[in-house]
Length: 638
Image (cartoon, rainbow, N blue to C red; front, top):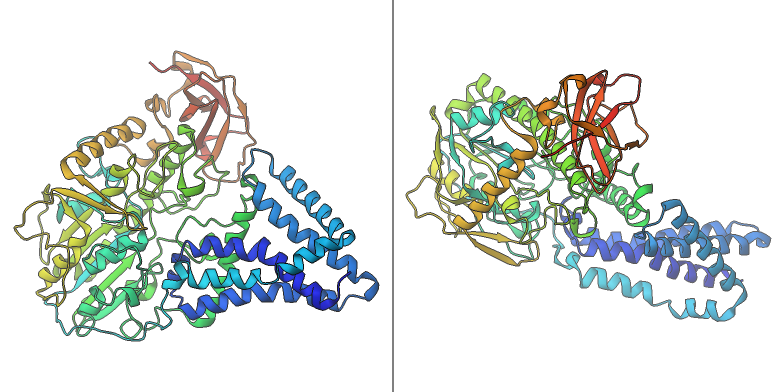
């Protein structure tokens, strides 16, 4: 067995291949992971050094305190484990049960350790690879997204001395396509989303508004700066020094609630940025969650916190105490007329995935249907994708509730009437099997592009609808015009309320800079077709409880099974049912030709769901299920 010095070198090399490099590769392509928590380049340097050096040093320390007789065995166990981790990541995508993949990786790791012990040449190869960890760190820091992080913190506040003539409130929802709010008439569905509908009735609704970017990283800064995004920008102040906060911050009281972007400099928004220790702590926590997702096969990762909702605080988001619709008491208390001009800005991570909230704010947990994989490409099973769409609409009901709570506070304090109120979203989301969930593509442009945009001017009482195509980069110029403030820098957007020519094209920019330019009329036609597809699945102008019926036969929801003609044998084999969740996931296999199923309990239809490729997934309110297994019938589709 090698000396402690050589053993430590070997552990460093194997750790770098098994853990450090996979994380460097993934996070190096997603610099938003660091930018979302306000990390500087120095944070990334320290992160890289700690990740590379500290864990193998800890393993070496364990060897050092082990009695000499057993030290070699401990070292071989570490070698086997690190090789096994490397192998498991290589095979995790295979269509094989996860436990079998883990056993296979463990066997390969044990075999590699045996070769390491018996063949000197193997140990020589590992020694020769000693420079590799330095190479991995160098590539991560110098040739990845991390290289674009600033070395300095956001300690300067280049605020203009503009003094607004009215208070202003800007609310940004996340991952909210316009179509999700609409009814069969193309208007806000007042039955399902009463608070969005009430806002539309008293404001100017720009119903043809498109975002300019596919993701939060660029879409939110575009709203706050009035500029088209650039590929090399992060959502931090050092990359966007001219924005809404620096425009008004010199003479305006700022109240900012946003954990995903960092455009307000600390001198204007004290307390918004986390301390160095907190940043590094959450960085370590979130890195461990990311690695587990990269390591484990999908069927073994159900208990790991989701990494779909934003770029940071994965453990916090998984906590039962975390609520993306919660408004901090201090922010809520500040929503009242102030002696100084004031701006309130809040970014809600609603109805953004993961979709785990009912309209009443109740959080649930179910065994997930197959979702999206690498590059956010949906599974090929449309029935599974439709359930995520169903859950998105249910969670949108909660976003509507949160908006109502906010509007009620504004009205109760008298701030609503005298203030400029702007409500919008950063981008949409798409639900098409085999296509991308959100990264922009030819197939999903109409789902990603269009977002809601409502502008209520001070003392405005009557609503109106503007059909002229607009863009989210028009929000900042509109706020400036309404408040009587001059913008002292160039912006790409134009005031929404000015008499300007309509936008002939929708411009969408991918995170890496590629531009999509689509004629507005053409994309609007595609959006209306997409709305028709949504309405055929989920209907409209009905309570949100009607969403437990999806697709053909949803009108049967709540009816007596005995009165329904044409139900057939689905040949159903149910998956295990967890009755502790609410709603309950009822899923299983059905005959290959079945396209839709009816789920019945206690003699009544409690859910209707599509089926595809011999599988179905149905959400069922727990109270509607009895003690007996639900009955699954095939629904004849004409």
